[in-house]
Length: 547
Image 1: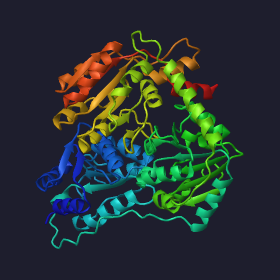
Image 2: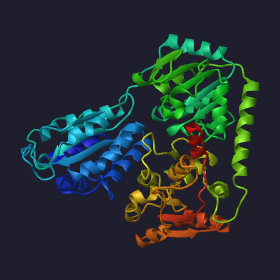
Image 3: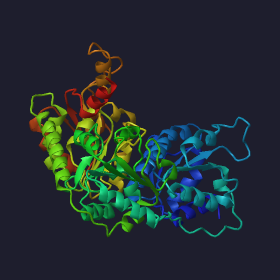
Image 4: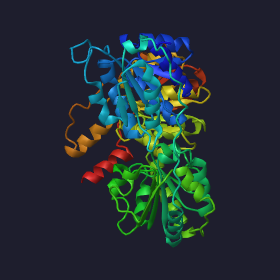
């Protein structure tokens, strides 16, 4: 068999059904075989989009998504997608072609140090030395991607190896399986003792809950113990915001109730969440409070904040070990949290009291809230317009709330939303973005149309880079902004020019009919919504922190 046939056979052995790609000279033989052998090739318009789509696929399936790009500039274009997956902890397997195996260091066409570029943003990166070793290197890449804290792995493959004959093909390895280390029994007992002594406990759930497939276990745990939970990152919706024990975003920038609750809490159980910038590098957890962190990645434990107990274990096995735990209800504390939540929600409602055009973002989100299907996948991109929606709309189901991740790679949620639409065509995939962010991957409207992906894209169009405008107004005393203005482009017409559908929404009375038409169309549909520039809770919080 050829190297390409062995490569594809290994991918299929590992359960790969879709490959996200952009054609290039280094890939032609592999693409020909992949197509012949029944892999779905989802070809995009920019290499970074291929990786972002693989990243979205990984998040929604908890299995490695595979991206395949050509070498040289195709490889460098893919790096932003790989870096985003690395920051997010997403198990992408990113594969790049490259020059002939015998032309290293000879100034070959499109040759550069691909491993040197990609190693700092991957868990594993290598160049297979010959085609017969493809199964070994793919096995290693997949194992590294899913092992411990997930993350991307990379292979750069000389193009001649795909056409090379493999005289004695090796046996294909079994599909890799992630390990699920259980917590120490003594640590579980210590945790329960600390919980029993706490008067105002809080649970903060992060992405590790979803990567471990522990959403159901988390919900049972908080119900048995009557513990309040806040969710962050991929864990948004792991317990519905509408659950009586879930108090929404664990980010004070979007949920002032969380900020107040954290200052009053005396105990934090941090599950699968880094104590990173989102938690103020630990400053949001008061010094007098006790903190227990559970994470599968040892270096995260105690980073930025001293712990009273560190548990290095898988979240699912840990919550299973806590399944029988019960605690007396803390009615006064839960009542306090409910009041904080009501007060914050009332502030958001008050922001939506002026219906005059151009629409305030809060007006728009309160108008569409009743129309969002319960099983819709919300993909939140960049923009102050977006942050209003993150504060107002509830997260209701696991793996139905996708975000940019710690690198804040604006634009990337458009390809992520395309992956969601491809994977779950019976559910609405809704990409919500600012007019600045949508510009990064406009050509992927073509991808949506070609692959018949009925994504709904909502662009909040205020003709500027909204967050930076607010930051500059705050920093410059409201006198001027620099390099923040954009045209109020008709992005709906751009979508139509590429074969999709779209509408221009200028008034409040147009919103609901336009949203209904978008959901009913069954085609890529873009709503270009004219909004006023309004400082979001997110940018207001950031500016408060800089004073």
